[in-house]
Length: 168
Image 1 (cartoon, rainbow, N blue to C red):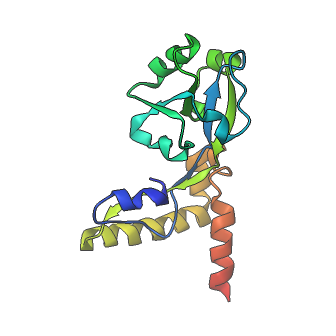
Image 2 (image 1 turned 60 degrees about the vertical axis):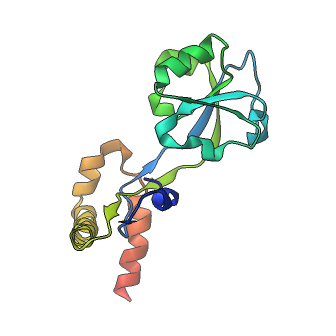
């Protein structure tokens, strides 16, 4: 989850360490029809997103919201000109869509967190997670697990601050 979503979960807590970094949230649009250079350009446009992700929190107040259960259907509606914008991440776009549409970033990369129940078991799991992820980073295993995504996940920057803090 995003840290900001913790309020929507009942009795949940987060560990100290994030799990990953989510790619930026993008407005995907047809450049032959619209020119999007700021968030306010979404005002008055029909904007679709996969409703489970709550990307509508990033929309300006006068964007016309069109929640969708299926990204592929939303992309076809965009192609047909039935909606103006789809909100999602670049990794969900097919190569064909990357060629047809332009993107505008509406939210930066954000850390992703595991959420645990605020119970004795949940607190034990958090301690285990936090301890193990630090061990995995120090041993180099975390980099092997994440492969090419390791550096984008920002682990070294976050954990090096922690390492230098612990050394003093």
